[in-house]
Image (cartoon, rainbow, N blue to C red; front, side, top):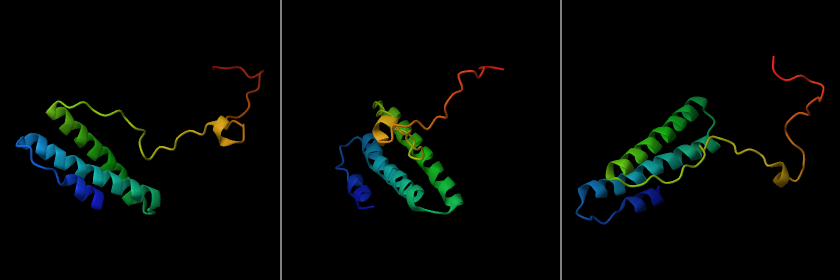
Length: 109
């Protein structure tokens, strides 16, 4: 919350459009951060769904505000609710999570 409030304290530039967006983006990012925290630590499934919706909605609004000003969009990050795939080389086990394929098994229909 403190980071969000600090980031919203924008020095006015005289461009009301830019000032609005520069204050709103940290506000929306604060909502995203709170929702991500809830997804990590919360236990209520209904609230988790709401948190996921908040993340998507707020990210879309941030993108729309940037585009309205003609600003470029930052590179996309994976959705915070996705679990990154395990890299067998970095997991230390050296084993794949995929089942072994039978060389005699036919593919297709």
